[in-house]
Image (spheres, rainbow, N blue to C red):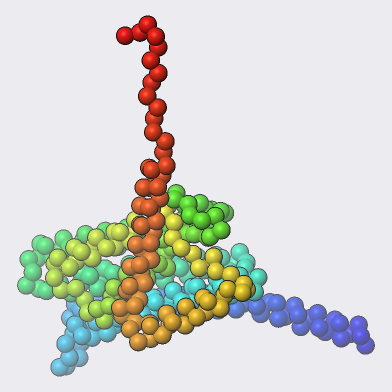
Length: 304
């Protein structure tokens, strides 16, 4: 009797263990679903911005803004899902090769393809028809090149992350902290989506705004392929006694996002981007100051 109970308990434990392996993949699938939804909403927004779709008596740009904003919000939720699947896998000790590959493929769609299409259509498809035709066409073409650079940088960032076992940033920080080498691709996607959401999806209408947008996308692309350090949430140990402090901080951030989501999310991504740049600059200045001065050559007696 005791033996049968033992076997039954072991069977239940194995089934529970298998179920725990599925849980992180559920959040990864939600991440992928958010990316697909963002692409579909971007396509509808682009169609309205081009005047291909519309409703009687409704400004097509307002409809386009609604769909673009939905796409940006979907990418924002995907960032949360992506963080959750990794955190759950580490907490439950259910990290697997299948989960890593699935997460990487989902990230390429949600944080590579989806924000690239959104950035291109939002920033260049709604330029006014009164603008010089050649300038308008060139802006759209240059925009396509820049967003493709963003997509390529995101793919390189994921590939580098997958093959490096223990990556070290060019400007190392505290040895007890974990850092990302280069801005992670969810951060790059979130940086683009936060700007779109800041303007509630209303597309760019001025030619100079499209140029500023191109520069911003290029900066995000460069930060992803850089070897500079960016803070990683993996350095937080939720099992430690100090974890309660992070939960309080997390609750405060959630409250701020709930009431002031447009400005708080934009401030968060800009702060995260600047953190990598500033850490690199600080390291460069400290390294320059720490270099000992070169001693003057010794004079040999008898030589002029």
